Amino acid sequence: MSYIVYILECADGSFYTNHTDDLEARLNEINEAINTRCYTYKRLPVKLVYKDQFPSKDEAKKSERRIKAWDRDKKQALIDGEWDKITKLARPKNQKLH
Image 1 (cartoon, one colour):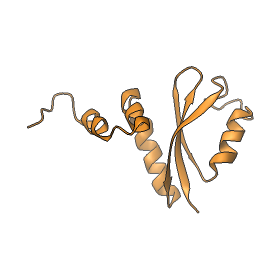
Image 2: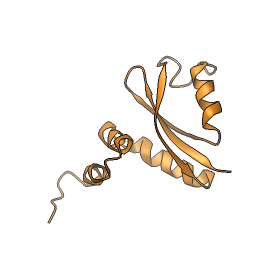
Image 3: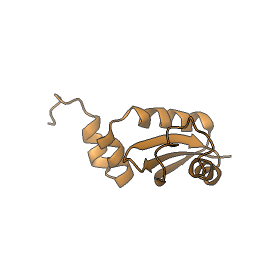
Image 4: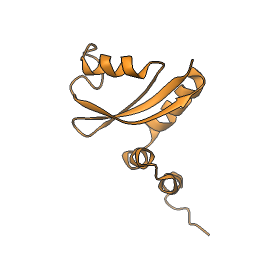
């Protein structure tokens, strides 16, 4: 079984990051607004903007936690596949390149 980390862009422009072992079922659940306590409930519709697959639940959870800690610019760079920008954004603001 594999696990997927995904990012949704909500109608209000915010990002929602999570993981699942069944992306299609999870997206259906979100779009049907089944869970009224879910972050996305009042932010529908949502759009899948990123996904990545992992061989284990632990690896997916680690990736999800790491991405959730990122600021919006870094998440957008991940969504856009801008790896150089992700690296640049990961550096402390006061660190200079040599």
